[in-house]
Amino acid sequence: MAASAGVAILLTFWLRIWHINATSLWYDEIFVLVHAERGLIEGMRELFLNDNALPLHGFLLAMWVQVAGSGEFAARYLSVLLGTITAPLVYRLSRAVSGRRISGLGTLLAYATLPIFVYYSQEVRMYALAVPLTVAFAWSGWRLVTGGKAAGAYTTLGLLMLMAHPYTGLAWLVVGLWGTLWILAGYRIPDDHVLPLPRRQRSWWHANLLLVTLTVPILLWARWRVEIDATAVSAIPVAAIQWIPVFFGVGQYLAQPWSGVFVTITLLAILATLILCLSSGSWRQGLWHLLGLSIPIAGLFLLTSIKAKWSERYLVPSWGIALVVAVGSGWELLLQQDAAHWKARALRALGALLALSWIGLTLPAVARQAEGTWAIALRDEWRPRPDFRETARYISEHDDPADAIVVVGGHASATLGYYYDGPAHLFGLPFDTQILDKRRIVDLQSLEVLARETEGAQRLWLVLWQDHLADPTGLIQSVLVERCRRLPVYTNPINVGLLLFDLDRCRPLDRMADPAVVLEIPFQAPIRLLGYDVIRTDETWEVNLWWEALGPLSEDYSAFVHLTGPDGTIVAQHDRLAGAEHYPTGTWYPGVRLRNRFFLDVPGSDCPNCRLRVGLYTARGRLLVFEGQDAIELAIP
Figure 1: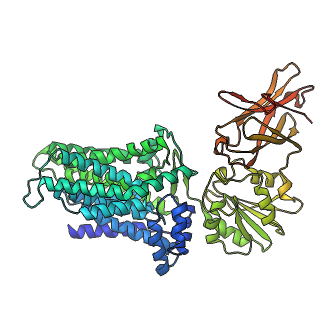
Figure 2 (figure 1 turned 120 degrees about the vertical axis):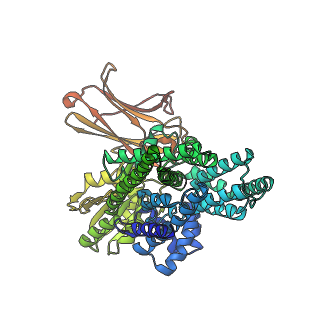
Figure 3 (figure 1 turned 135 degrees about the vertical axis):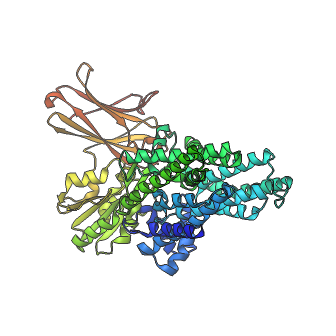
């Protein structure tokens, strides 16, 4: 059996190192890698302030790059090693949970071949570290409950895993609830070599109380991060749960019916585990599996309903581990049935079929993943990883010393800079920022930065990634497309926009989005209408409104543009959220200036004696102008 486990561990390593550099490093990876290169003090301080996880992984990576370097292979190889180290830990955890009724080989094979674990064992992020720490923590928790041992390891590993990723707390919730229920039930294990129940109880309560005390600073830090995180959301729809079997299965890589088949064989293995555990009186094993497969999902939904960030990948160190333990245990429990009875033989055949079917589906999925089709699950959608390597390669082959490169959003400029070492001046908008922050977005003032940074440049490369968040009104792209001559680009990098513009005769860039008519009319909230213009194109009128926030805004306002006839009847109208879906007025900071576009369908392209009225409103009614009117009447040119 030891030889089989050794082969499975080698398979784990091989699958994780296979085509390790099929995709380029992306923003999250470069973010931590760049800080790790800065050293243990400066780099860790910046990660502590800017990352959504404490910098334990960054600390380890900083030491690693000092020895192995910061190239693609070297940086990802650390994750490969951590993913491989997880394999024997999963093996030991599975054996402990089963009471050594199974060998643990099934769980080891399930972990080795599940694409999501391969995925995060090839990424330069904290998940590669969080998973082995969580498995070791769960194993020590089992030992603490059943034998009163490993209290020190339990507390230490719990603290470390929370420092690796805050959502490993979901695993602590599972282990803590399971252990507490079992202790309170007064269950006594028939083994003379374990500590008496009262002493085990004291060890359990003391270890958890100490861990709670040690994690108070982490909880305070996590609360602070949620408050300032630009991607934190709330009210996640229950429909998002549909993506869990896709993300943890083969649905990203294999089409139907195979992804459906995979879900079916997974559910059958889990069901077999639960039934066989409960029917044989192994209540503690059955309770472990039930809690591990339900609590993390419920806990994540509870957190996001308050205010947090949702992503299925946050379940990897908790629900993902419970998944492979339950599936692998089901295979082995079925295969152990007594073959003397025809029903038992059928169950053994079912166990073999489930295991072979799992491997037969996961290996092709891992092969597809190795081709570079990795994806990022974000709420209810998935996107391929952005290919900054191809973007930089193409620019390098066609650039000129007189070129400039702007990355919108600017937080990804370091990602492109990791691959690009040409002569063009590279910068990002919003300018001089390392993270996506809704307090710092592209607005009209960013055009001044664009003009300054491109002074003397003849051409401008425009690189777009997460631009709908960094430039919510599409200001930069719209100005360049409308005012500058666009040059051909003969590549289409995955999930990255790349455009090239000739800057001759399209300057000054900082004056290209000024309103034709300046108004500066304030409302009875800290916002004012700076100006407007009207562009007529056949039967479509484009009305542009310029807004400025004079102070914090407590509500999300919608804006309306109404074209009314002489009798007040609305001829055409366009209502929309002021700002953008990802940047409503409630998130504006004082001083931000934005342009909104509205389009009116005007029959006959003309409207004699018509009036143009604009304003702001919420569900409670219109926001009054400072002078008391509920709308502003604009002159039609």
